[in-house]
Every structure is written in structure tokens, then in C-alpha cells.
Length: 252
Image (tube, rainbow, N blue to C red; front, side):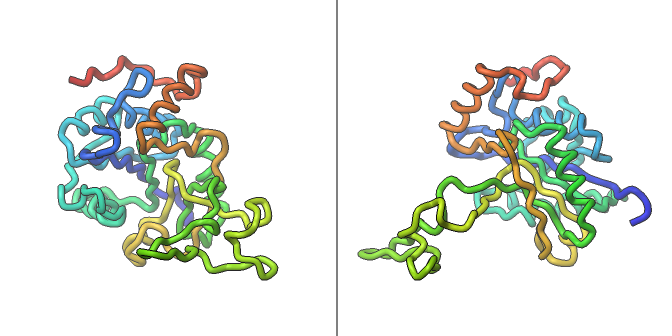
């Protein structure tokens, strides 16, 4: 592509979370959690537009206050606990194109990962553009609990999830250090060509570049204990959050 590709940031912020009620707008530091993903997307300078995909008018108001655009609300049908990403990503692209807003690349920046930095985004895009045959890029980190030691329980008995061996010994009976490195995806970011959504009907395609997160840039807040840990981190190091230079939105 000779011209600079048009790039869209999507901040997904559905309502209805259960483990942490109103998770995406719960306070972290002085601001609602989704504010940090919007802020870093804008400050990175990589995106032609920053969109918040939400089903909530209240979340939409908060997102717009922090600089994101919310041109439409997401349908409740694709905002449930089990709604796959492809549904709301496809809907977002379709609705934008109806308004003659056409993009080449999209990136998902989830609000539950508030510690990503401008450098995180810049490094990920540099890696993505260096690999012209890539369909997408996804942030991953080395897993702390190896899947080779995971089991599926079927009534009375159980079987290992991964039926692999190392020198004839089942993975589950080997030391962690002896097993192959396995990575798990995190919420930091995903990047993909729009064509992947249209042609492959998914958000990843076949050629997926791993972006290996470091430090807390891939930390994901999905459980109350994660939120407590994040707040403790901020107390110890207030600069771990990218500064937001506007007054905090007052949540009613």
C-alpha cells in the first residue's frame, strides 16, 4: 500500500459486566477505566479516528467526554457475555462505512488493560508494518500456568487437556521449566486489516504476529482481585498511568 493506511481504534465498552459491576467505567485513579484506553489511543498519534463501541448511553457520554467518538450505540443482541468479538467489530465497520468512513486497519484497545503506553502502541504497529504478509497482530505474554498441566473433569475421572509427551513423559508430569514456552493472549491490543474481517469472517486471519507484552502493559482487569492489585500499583507508582489532562468525569 503506497499511501498511509487509514487506521481505526476501537474501544469496546459494553455494559452488564458481572464480576466487577460497570467494570469499564469503574474508577481507576481519578478517572473511569475506559478513559485511559481512549487517552493513550489519541496520544499515540497512530489513529485517524478513535471509536468507542458501547451499548450504554452513559458509557457513550463518558467516552465522548474523553475524546472518543460514539456515532451509534451497539445493539444489545451483540453485547452479551457470550457475544463474540467478530459480531460487534463487523457491526462497527458496517455502520461506519454506511457513513462513508472507510478504514484499512483497525486496532482493539480494551479498557480493562489501562497500563499500555504510547510506546506499546508504537512498537506493536512497527512490528505489524514490518511484516507485510501478516493478517493481524495480537498481544500475548508467557503463561504462568502451563496448559500441559490442565485437566478436563468428566464425572468420575479426568483427562489432560493436552495429550503431549516430552521424551516419553506426559507434559503434566514434567517440570514447568522443561516444557515448551506457551503464550496466552492478553487485553493490551490487537491490530488487523479490515479485509480480514470481510474475507475471513474473523478478527485474526491466518498469519498472526505475536506481540510479546512486558511489565504491566498487558495487565488485564477482569476480577475484583485484579482491580485491587491495580489500585495498589497506582498507589505505589502514580506515573504508571498515562496522564489525562482534563478534569475527571463525575460519575453519578
